[in-house]
Structures are given as C-alpha cells and as structure tokens.
Image (tube, rainbow, N blue to C red; front, side, top):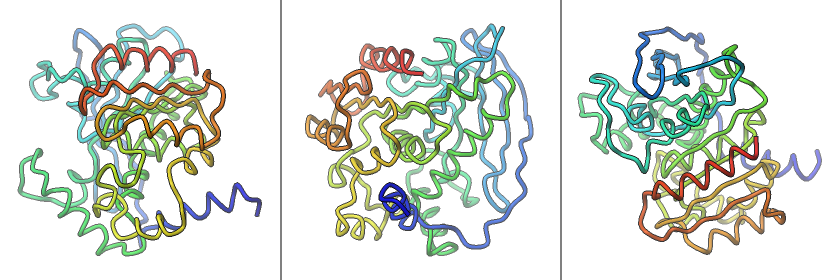
Length: 299
C-alpha cells in the first residue's frame, strides 16, 4: 500500500463502518412542483435499514442538455432551497440558500434532510436541536464502530448517487457546496468521493478546536485519536486530490485556515480561493457569488 492509501485508510478506519446496515436502495417520487426559480422534484430516498431521507432535486427552468450539478447538504431541504416546501413561500435566508443560488446559475441541485430528522422517530419540532444528541446517541449505540460524521458522509453520498443516475446531469461536472454543518459534510464527502470534482465550504471550522467537532453527531470521542495522530483537514484535503477548493471564512474560520490550505499542498491560486469576510457566521451574498464564480470556472 502506498503512502497516499495509508493516509486514506487511516481516515476511513477512524470514520468506521456500521454493523448490520444492509438495506434495499429505493427512490420514490413524492411530488413535482414549480417555483419562479426552479422546477422541483421531491423524493423519499432510502438512507438506512427502515429509514428514508426527504430529498429535493432542483432543476433550472430550461433543460436542453446535460447540466453540471451540485450537492448542497444542510439541515433540511427548505433552507438550502430557499423555499418552504409546504407553502412554496420564500424562506428569506440568503446566507444559506445555496441550492437556490446555484440552480439560478444553471446547475441541477440536490439537497436532503440530515440524519437528526431521519434516524429516530422523535416527537420533536424539526428545529429542536436536541434531535442531534438523541439521534447520535442512538446511532452510536446501534453502531459503536461508526461515527456521526460517517453517517453524514454516507447520507450525502446517496445524493451523489441520485445525480449520477439522472440523465439530465453531466456526471463529470458534479460539485459540492455547504455552509456550517453543510460545510463539514461538503468537505468530507468531497474529499472522499472521487465523483465530486470541486468543493466549496463556508465557515465550518477547519481547525478542530474552533468548532464542535467533538460532539457525538460528528467525531465524538474519536476526535482525541485524530489529534493524537496529528491528523487534520490539511491532510484530508491532500488525500482528496487537491480538487478545486473554496473556503469562505467568517467566524469559526479565520485567517489561520489559509495555512491548512497551503499545508495541504495548494500552491496555484487557480486551484483554490480563500475569502475571510470576518462579518459573522453567515456569508454575505456578494462573497458567495465570488465563490460560485470560482466554481463555475473550475468544473
């Protein structure tokens, strides 16, 4: 095994694997709808034994050829899509509606529920943050060798599967984009899935200690093993093959995050873009547009 594969194996070993996780893959169309910005297809997608994730495929108003596509992981589809899926009214969250921004630019976009909404049947509001701990506790009890980040990666890769099976998508032009939680999911899935050609992450916490990586819905107790082995996100970017990469810093990332990018091996400014707006957690729209412009030139 060469050095590259040694590093990859270390990450995969710590991410872990679930036990007795076989399930039949299925994708069931729930409904189609139209908004002024995109045509939507809402699906129920199997994401584990006995569980499904609500998945939204967003298509530009005109599709005349195979189109580039983006995966946009986040808490649930409404927020990334910029529309309440029940009322079809705008959600007015411009700093996180990345799927909406990109479908307007001509990309096919896909987004879905995260596992805090799918792993356990909880009698809690969708916005109740205690869902994360309750779901993660159940996940790790059922699969003690796995991790929360492993589940997030597995569910996000299902969205890549959906895009690759859709004849309207150019499979050689798939990117991934995410903010905060979605940025974590984008980084890991983008680095560990060769089908993804470019990555944009916003304020997710490049440094282990700048955000909540130790929570059980991410790395939990395994974070100490990562630190002891001197494993960091510079190494993850390197084993991901130094794909075109955008990092938007704001609060949980700062100027120090640029050092991770350079230590990963990025030397050519045409291959990465770093912006620190330093104005809080959510990125301003003009900063996001700079990131999208970079992606558009990259894949």
